Length: 195
Image (tube, rainbow, N blue to C red; front, top):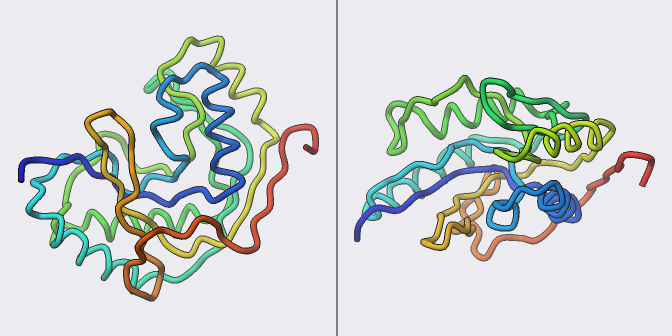
């Protein structure tokens, strides 16, 4: 079957996901339209395609042990100069994200791996673009806020075209859902300037 590149993340639901993706593209990040807006739990990881069933079983177990939690984004941060990234901060839900990513990457599981940097949950809004555009993203989204109940996470695969596509959703306390649900109840957002 060969190797595939997978990732596990919490999707930022609509309307927030598309809005942040459009803003990211507007800052000049060419990768914006190939990467759904998300909070990473497992970064891009190359695996043997034959291991996908074991990975899916593992993720089902992780999700079954999880419980919904409030997720709130607020304000911006950056990893510069260490890494050329500007992001929206996770104001509520960071502890739950940290627990989840540890479970996903557990040493006894099929996707055990070390991280390049310590885990810091966030939503990327600019990556590897000109410094002026990164500064603009940091400033323009400083007052951005959005919140929703996080009810699960998803498995993604990166296609040969570089686009990430959702393979399965894993709702907390349940089994995998195919196709993925498009929206969550109870979402809200505030753009800079009260929009």
